[in-house]
Image (cartoon, rainbow, N blue to C red; front, side, top):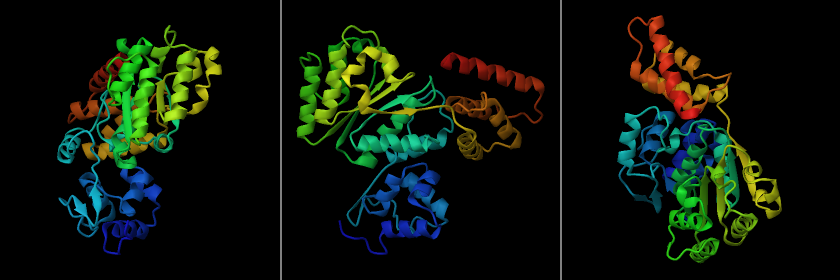
Length: 362
């Protein structure tokens, strides 16, 4: 790639960041992305999409033109415009983002909505890029699936097109047998599912991807669904481990308990456990909750009393569960404080909050 001159967008972006005294990691945290993305922008691999152009403009107090980012040009000096909305068009993503502030019990549609979890996001992205497997462990509704959604939303932008990422839920009826599991895995990885006989068919599909220089990533949610199933034997897990080594298959498994507790100590001889690094997700600490509450309250136009209520009702035992933060914000936005709030208002608010939260968490 040609070294960019001082007028190229990547040089201007780098200079703007350095003028603030920020590292790439610090800028990534402010934007809600990763240092890998910042590096790709500044090295000329990609150009920020329209959403991030706006954020950069606001952050630096410079126009998009002053940053060298001209909207509407798909290519500039050999660079390809990237979009932060892989699941739809950039314009559609922007409109949807403006219409919703809180995402309660919904899939993650926009990578920038994955608040906090910086270390966990970096670990998952870096290990996946190195073709290493990861186990994500945490209680119900703590954000395990959102972390995988974040990976899926950013993969093309972060890694390029060679990664094929598939997602399946192990509790699906179709995943109760080895043949069913292999069929689902092939389908979500974009491979043919004719005459599937089990892991042997999955092995053949992975060979096809390897010959095309593609890297398969299989995300298995609700990994507990594979517990105590007759087909999922020691040989089955040995087979998955072997395919991870032989064909670069990246496994990302999500469970409420560590893998050893899910499939049992008798599986230790399979070597399945030792290909993973474990990421443990817990409710937000105060500093993480503060980032979320202040950012969302500003966008929602919350007053002082609403912000105080946000803090109060989202807390549980000194921690702030991400799903509860989303729900409290959503209810505050829907109900908005009356001109003169009463004890009855807050009693009704709390009853509604606990009723809804209990239904999805317990």
